[in-house]
Image (cartoon, rainbow, N blue to C red):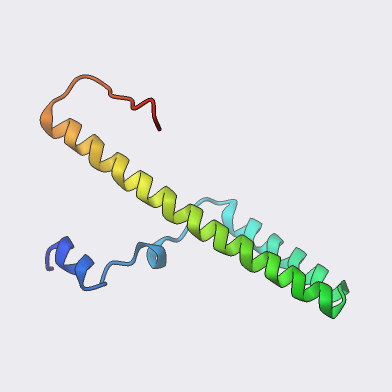
Length: 98
């Protein structure tokens, strides 16, 4: 296997495609969301359906952006923890501006 840096550079590492939630409640919640979405789509007018789909798309976009930020924060926190482990620092630093 090549280095992680080379694989990342070549686009061979795509975390957003590899994340599969293993929380037991995740899939039932996803199915319930899908069922509720279908319930409303069957009852709405064409105009309301269009607005509902737009709302759903915006929600998905928002969730994706939030997930990306969460991933970035988690990655940075993990890197900071590793620096702390390798440097042997004993203090905990908290930036009050965060």
